[in-house]
Length: 126
Length: 113
Image (tube, rainbow over all chains, first blue to last red; front, side, top):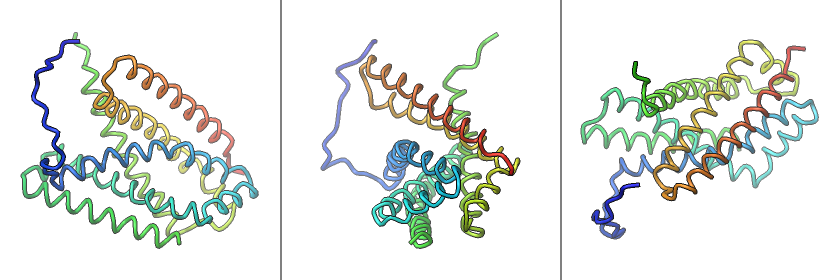
């Protein structure tokens, strides 16, 4: 591989400004990886819920355990953030909301609507 | 004739699958919210309906390709050593193949009763 090892690297975390658009972007990645890691568990619960009345009862019991309910809070947020950030991404691809101000506005919308959606899901579950 | 480059194709796969995943998740959330299944048979028979079952199957397939492209992008951005990338992508392929087999087997079992 050819590499230019003299490229300047600026990684002073105290001086790097992290705009809200970057926050949405890294949140999209992090939530995506977390959703990926949760897949085997979600598949397991889906499988269990379709195995028969007993499996369905067991899946419901797992989902109503306090520990699992707590885990569902970040999960709901990962899902809503990833969904909304993805929709924003598709709009950006269509050149909608690309300008600096509208991009910022869209990012704020993703963060706040995502949090509200997660709360709605959580309230619905608890 | 030029073969379309892999980059453009995965870019398209990522967006197409994303659009379907978004629609499916909203539809499923709406169903669970407005008509939450109260017992096993209600849930099972709903999933077993041919249209619902096809929507689920398509969802899982879209999900698996979406994850494949997404995780590949993450690996390409953060993992430098070629051998580590190779190991990660191979494990990823095996994992996704396993999940695909699991889901196909599972959905095969779900038939209208």
